[in-house]
Amino acid sequence: MQVQKRPVAAFVGVLLFGALLYFAMTELQPLLGEHLFDYGTWYENSLGNGWWRLLWMIGDGTEPFFHKTILGGAFLLLGTAAAYFLDCKRSRFRGIPIAYGMGKIFPAVFGAAFLSHLLAILLFGGLRVENDAWTATFIPYVSVAAAVVLLYGASWPSVLTGGVLGALFTTPIAVVLRSAVLIPLGMPTVIGSVTGMWLGGILSFEICRILPWMKKKELPINELSPAQVKGETALSKYKLLHPNRFFVRRMLADYSEPMFVGNEIAGGALIVGSLLTWALDPLQPYYGTGWFPACVFSQIVTGAVAMFLYWDQWLTHDFFPTFVPVVSVAPAMILCFGPSLPVILISAVLGGVAAPACAKMINDKIPPHWNGMVGSTASMAICSFAVYTVLYCLTAAFPVLAA
Image 1: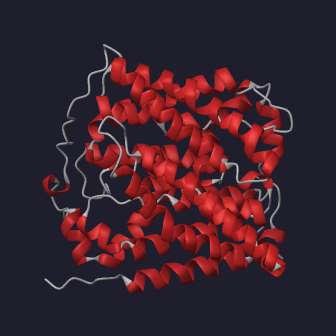
Image 2: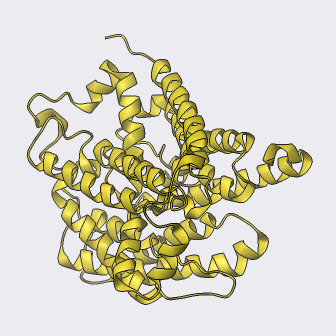
Image 3: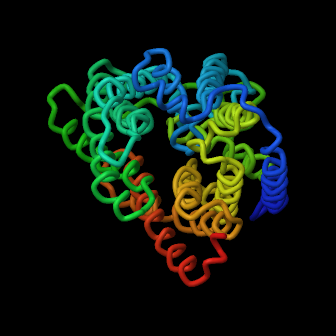
């Protein structure tokens, strides 16, 4: 069988699609009306109204991608439910197996994440620090709780323990770093959010290690492995037979990776929902900045660069963290330096090159009782700081880059 080393057609096609989408969105945005609610209205109403707080929680599903859209969050939930249902039904249309092939325990993974998210909202949703009106309530939803279940199994002790520990550690760490360090220095606040994840994760994993009711065990791989579904080609073969298709599918799946889903149906649903939100009210996504077209373009470019550069890793491994720059470096740099094309492209390329390799290097060194979330989120912090430093120097020397 002849192996195509690099899916050039998919890479070029995705970049061209991203560019066309960016310019189309940029031209259309001034013509769009306000048919939903803008970010400011959403945020202000969420502080004291239960219904608006629920909507805020739904939008938190898109927060790792900097989208913060209500329909993106709702579509993500629907897409995830569809992926799980198809996985359970052994459908050949299920896409990439949900939760790394452990779909049988996904309800426990989601339950722990939801519990942690809810606790963070109740405990810290009203917390406001001087000069910082935003609290990272989404962090427990995409970090510690789900990772604990993946490590310790789908038992009530692991669900409850992961949910509580995730809520107690992650958000407070992020709030302190944001308000005390990052905002005063003008640095990307994503560093605080992801540090809350990796540092809170380490603390939680070490506590779980000594708790008498938490026993780490080998988890059974879902019996619905790709080769056991009638009419479906195993992904190990699919990558070789259809490299261009897998390139696109995996890029879409990366949009659900922070939620430990890793499925293109869920990821595609998130994207469609966020774009629909933007079409209905362009001042809701991306924190009401009006820069959502730049955010989308940067994520397409950095995801494509990461997938293309590390294609050999995807051919030889079941997983490689190409999602890392999509949820950190590129969109974070736009918030710091503005939506100019040089900022978009420089941050996207640098993030796509550095972040996945950094995550892999860290995860190769962590102890077995830590989840790979630690390396992924630590890489987000390290690479965001590094690319910020590069862009800070470049834009200081050549201000036209940020114009």
